[in-house]
Length: 339
Image 1: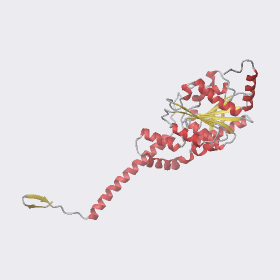
Image 2 (image 1 turned 90 degrees about the vertical axis):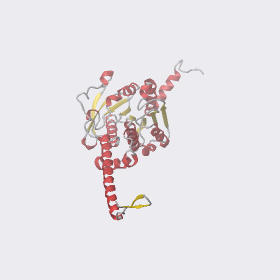
Image 3 (image 1 turned 180 degrees about the vertical axis):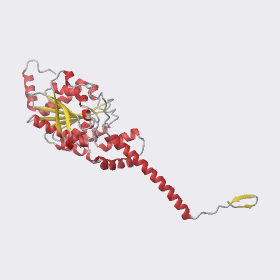
Image 4 (image 1 turned 180 degrees about the horizontal axis):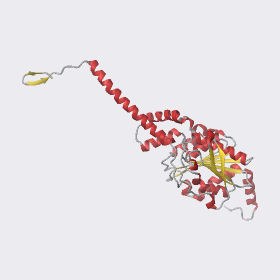
């Protein structure tokens, strides 16, 4: 770089480079950086999609679970077809004298044994109970899952199975987490379902994925969610908009809906149940539990939980039976309390 001396100071004199040459170099650098950013974003989006939909890993110990056998209850192992030529498996807890049926829908990557506690309580209350595994869950682990998209089709297949098996069935559905969202969407599409209990649902699949990205990846989630949605469509055949209980919950009325959510839930936000409650028609209930984590209401107080859930189905599935029972109770000595 040339210099010239003026009054004892050395002053550097720069020669300007041609603007076009500098612009070309800057554009090239930005192009490389932009390409690297896009490649990184796509890789991150693919990681998210893979995390959502990858088959659940299987082990030789997966069959080591409880069954209704451990509870001493009668049950039948059943199988029924669903979309794509798959066969779903489940347990039917029978009440031959009753037409009341509750279908229990488990959570994301769960198994039907997870629902035996509440399932037995509902069976003891006089309901036939069907507990089943979706594709990619339980005994069927090893195939892709979709966080509610194909799982709602599996639930509808379970409804068809029950209606064929128990003609004239009075149907209710109970779901947990993803299964709660499945229960809402499935019941919205099947008016023959008379009551819904949804424990810890998400309002939109997009919201559930967004929450997890913020918790785990700590990156700007807006652009990333757009790429995830694009890849879900390309690789798995569905988009976030295809799994939105919030858009369908209004179709449940006038059938009763009970929403349950722990206020300490770190998996699905309690605000999702509040949004679903606001969008639902009557009759509806929202049961929020302070200090309770995801799907923890059952464990907070098993007796209270089982009675409150069972009462929803008792009223909706057998109103005449409930009325008769109440009339008999009033006629018995000592049935009325003062005060």
